[in-house]
Picture (tube, rainbow, N blue to C red):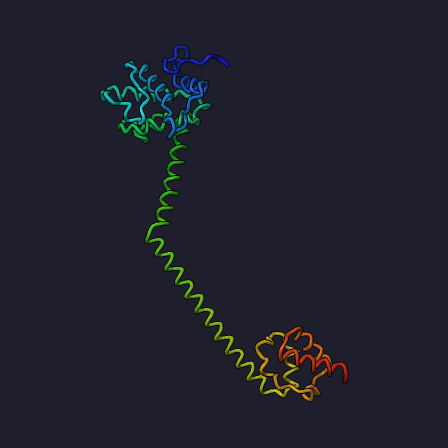
Length: 272
């Protein structure tokens, strides 16, 4: 492994690519470069590139690993602030694609956008980096930030009191509608059952049983009342095929249907 260079010194052999050299040295030194690190704040790395920018701008190096990027400019004149930012932007413009999407370059971009200087606002910074690998990385960062903001706003809207109240209102309305629909269907089934019982009551018992044997659309559970009084003599006019079909339809039903099945089975066994 090549010896680790001091990233606090402005590199001499790569004068046009000093920021990339700082990034590479930070990686070799295993410094933290993660944006928004809450453990160390990337202080060593940040002090290195701000000091490098100061050297490039011809300013004294006096940075003490600031916790917030705004503190970089403490005791700096407006002109010195402009020179620092421009030096860092020039370093970003020369960063190769190899590092453009790295945590280190994202940390630099986050610092620049957090400075709050007019000439370093995100739109202007992006314009200055347009057409460079760092500019592409910044565009991806902005798109990611916009997607996160959109998700957060949707989440907040979804969990807001009016949204929760509206969902609860819709839930109650839907529940009431389902209940009303069930009641309507129950009334319709009741009316259909009464009509069916009335039509069966007009038929003699053998014809009634034959109708139940032939018409499988009639639900047997709805018409038990129509055959409760059936007797063995009522089966005299019922054909063999119809009696067998009705036994099959009754199946394992109990109660009055079981009694009718036994009568039909006796009839089938003795007379047909």
